[in-house]
Amino acid sequence: MRIFTAVLATETNTFSPICVDRRAFEASLYAPPGTHPETPTLCSAPITVGRRVTAEKGWELIEGTAAWADPAGLVNRRTYEDLRDEILDQLRAAMPVDAVVLGLHGAMVADGYEDTEGDFLSRVRQIVGPDVLVCAELDPHSHLTKKRLSAANFFVYFKEFPHTDFVDRAEDLWRIAVDTLEGRAKPAMSVFDCRMIDVFPTSREPMRSFVDKIMTIEKSDADILSISVVHGFMAGDVPEMGTKLLVVSDNKPDKGSTLARDLGLELFSKRGTFIMPQIDEKQAVAEAMAAHLGPVVIADIWDNPGGGTAGDATVILEELLAQGARDTAIGTIWDPMAVQICMAAGEGAEIPLRFGAKSAPGTGNPVDGIVKVVHLVANAEMRFGESFAPFGDAAHIELDGIDIILNSTRAQSFDPSLFSVMGIDPTRKKILVIKSTNHFYASFSKIASEILYCSAGTPYPNNPARTPYRRAPKDIWPMVADPHAA
Ligand SMILES: [Zn+2]
Image (tube, rainbow, N blue to C red; front, side):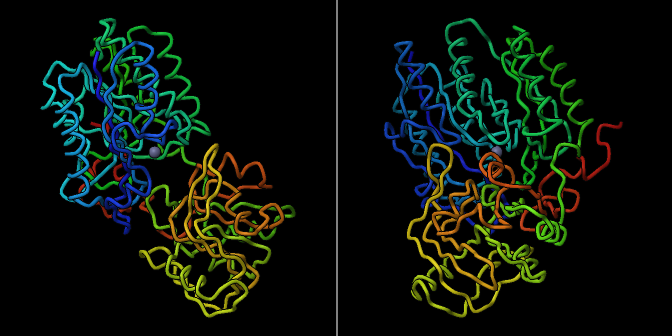
């Protein structure tokens, strides 16, 4: 067997001011054929798992390019078309193949392309013809469109959010692909449109039990090859935005449809109960200051660069200053211009500085003050599990008793080491403010006396009932109360 694999992925928040060009892919992951590292990033596990599976089978794996950009805004048209055509040319050169196994995200939007994955998959199908297996692993924060469904044989999505299972799901993808190629399975996709959009962390109930339940069904029913909850992505203003339930059956589309509908309606019945309880910045700062033990972690959950925002909101900082908080550290506020000024001033300098909140409305106001430049680090990195996440040239400044880390490469606050590399001991602070929705939890919960989920300002379109969508459906929950009522 000859199998072609490639990766083309990013997550597009169409409301984000941070546009994505080729440099953004090169800064995150751009690996020409054969140069993908041994460890995968979020969407590239089909390559690393595929190397092992095909080696064991004695099959030939033809690697195409792998490209991934960290979440941000609209992708430059030329950038998308060039990366797409690069991979399609590689596929043409590799023909004939028996299968195409891809790593995609599913929420990429490029200038002129609302459904980039649909466009890409259709062109793959055109090249390989109707009989070659085409499948992909995707992130559940994506849009499952009809165009994608008609172009591919089957999809497998991550089940966990945080996405701790992207390697496990690539194993599922390859297992089903091998079974199909060896004639033991005939995947058929059945989809139920839940007609809703919501946020589904699997680190808490009720989503934890729901995911456990679908995994039990996968194990116990031989007709069911895979079940995915496609969460949808509310920051992507596209016509087919929304939550979908996908069942991949072994050629039992009617049974798959019934199961997809039952599970989808169960999910719909729990709408609005999945997301963690949130408080505003006034309450968060007051509660953190009143706590007896530190550090209290205030998560600025909607100004999360991992969801495509700039990460420069100052709403919580302004509240800390207003309430006179001390013994507090903030990691991070993105402001490359302010970092450059601090670098020029040097460690120890006291300078007038304006920083933060330059990217978009709803992020607060730029903060002005006489700040002390405490510590400067070029090319700073924080830990992220077994690897490291860069946050660029960074400046630790102090303003009115608050330690603030300014960074120049947008990065979600994954790990407390982001403070220590900047000379701040996070365990000795009363209050830590970080920018992350959910991924911070595993590492910060180890040092936090308490975690407060704070919804501050409107850096992200987190309230679909009020988001000014132009292209997304308006007849789904929560825009309407019950779209399933006839
Ligand atoms: Zn995701």
